[in-house]
Every structure is written in structure tokens, then in C-alpha cells.
Length: 247
Ligand SMILES: C[S@@+](CC[C@H](N)C(=O)[O-])C[C@H]1O[C@@H](n2cnc3c(N)ncnc32)[C@H](O)[C@@H]1O
Image (cartoon, rainbow, N blue to C red):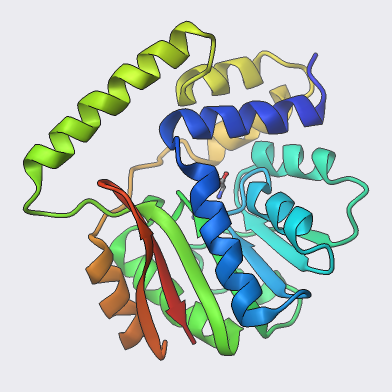
């Protein structure tokens, strides 16, 4: 049986298998949070999973506080176990597709809403409603930062070259024992520590379908329409970007 901390580390390795620059995008995120909100920001870690963003936030800015919100009982169990002695983190279970999802949050406003590799799970209608909700949760001048897949049209050669390169890297890492998504969930289901919440999440996500992906410029335009003062791209790779919007 693994410990909660083992599962936290193993989650990060699995996510890094998909996103080799994951730590770099978190670093850019936190640079902006510190620049805009100083040493003690109030943060919402949206679709927090195991709380990876909050963990990096506390390491970087020890006076920060964070609320992690997610729907997955297994990932929230890992977050709850790993951060058991961490008074700076509040965990909330909510479905971002539910228009009342924010009702259970500690009262705002927040200095920053941070999220990674999650909002592409949502259909466009739900995402647009969520962008409006986030504009209402942030203080004026607060930041929304979303690191996610944002495939661009018009660069098929670059995308194919990058895909092939990443595929070769993943094959090497798999041979060294790093789990992909399916392998990771199979290992989690086999651990008595996680078997119950993994069974519960299988029911919650049993009808899960991938949501919609859009290029970064689509997101920046929609964020301005949703009430953000400005929006732009703070970091990008061939396939992904960190979209940044100021309330
Ligand atoms: C790939 S994980 C990323 C987790 C974390 N942000 C990270 O970078 O490690 C995607 C997360 O989005 C969450 N998620 C997807 N749809 C959701 C929804 N409708 N409501 C709440 N959370 C959701 C999943 O449960 C999962 O934790």
C-alpha cells in the first residue's frame, strides 16, 4: 500500500508524462500571482485534482491561502491525505458544470483563480458560463490563469512534428516505469487506500466525454466578453498555452 505522499508524487509523474513543461508553466503562473497579489494571495485552485498547484503556491508564497475545488473523490482523497496538516488549504467538492458550483466556496473575492489541464473537460456552453462566474469571484485587478491544451489551426506540420517527438519521449519514459492515465488509475484502483474513492469516481465519470478545445485567442476573446479587463497569453508551446486574464 502506498502512502498519500507516494500517490501525490506518482500523480505528478503521470501528469508530467503528458506535460514535460508542467513545472515551467506553474512557475510562470506563480510569478504572475506574486507580481499582482504580493506575498499573501487568496487563491482558488480550480479543478485542483490532488492539489499540485496549491502545493507549489505554498512552497513559493508561504503566507498564501488556497481553496481547491474538484469533483473527483479519489483525487480529493489524495489531496486531503497529502495536505492533512495544512491549514492553508480548504478542499471543496463541486461540479463546475453546475451553475451553483460556487455556493460551497469560502466567501470571495479571490486574488487569483489558477487552473491547469482541466477546463478542456468542459463543453463550450459550460465553459462560457464558468468564465462569467470567475469574473464575479475575482477582485478587480485579480488574475485568472489557465494552463491547458489550446491547439492552433494553420500549423499542421509543427503539430505533427511535436506530437511525434513527444510520443518518442513518452515511450522512453513508459519503458522506465512511468504510468500513463489508464495505468495510473488501474494502479490506484488496486491500492486498498484508494479502492473505494476510485470506485466512486468511476460512477461519477461513467458518462464522461471529452469537452471542447479552442485556440488561445478564442479564450482571450471570450474572457474579455465575460467581463475581464484584458486577456493574453503568458506562456505557450506548440500545443498548449497559459492564458492570463485580469479582472
Ligand atoms: C488532468 S486533471 C488536472 C488536475 C490538476 N489541475 C493538476 O494540474 O494536477 C483534471 C481535473 O479536472 C477535474 N474536473 C474535470 N471536470 C470537472 C468538473 N466538471 N467539475 C470539477 N472538476 C472537474 C478532474 O476531476 C481532474 O481533477
